[in-house]
Length: 49
Length: 142
Image (cartoon, rainbow over all chains, first blue to last red; front, side, top):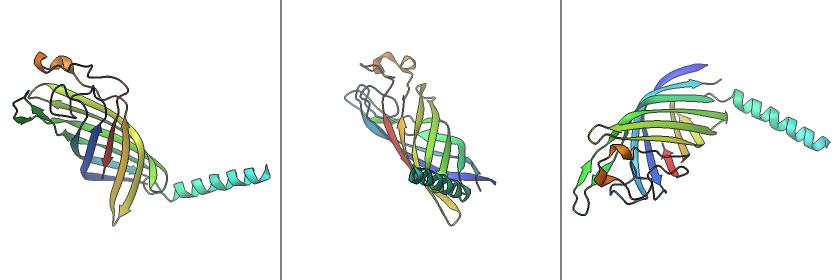
């Protein structure tokens, strides 16, 4: 059985442990670990019985 | 030996039964994503919002009811400073249907958060390698 629906809101909390990574996880250039948030919305396909 | 065979047979039967009763054994998602991101000017500030807009796709497989695994890919781009970000993540997933609405919580480990340091102004280049493979990030979603 297949269903098509909408995911109204998806909330992601991203925590970065990498001191070298930069973009998307912290605000100050040159710093390291940090947190950021991401939201998403879209279409969902479900398959199952 | 006989006990082991019976145990394996019972486990296979139970797994097949659980799969047959699972209404969401495979879930595929695709859509728009927005990654919140702020830039703090060196030493003085203030914070400047520079979110990255893009897309996100994910696929989840639940061999048994409520429990499964999920992989996720997202790409974002900030037109204000031409930064981009890609995330590749995967991990265990717990899901439930409540009154027709599906909820899930996923713990994802990221293999390699990527950046585009060459697209940044030189003054913002990091002192260390920005896209070091093997770095780790976690994500919980609801």
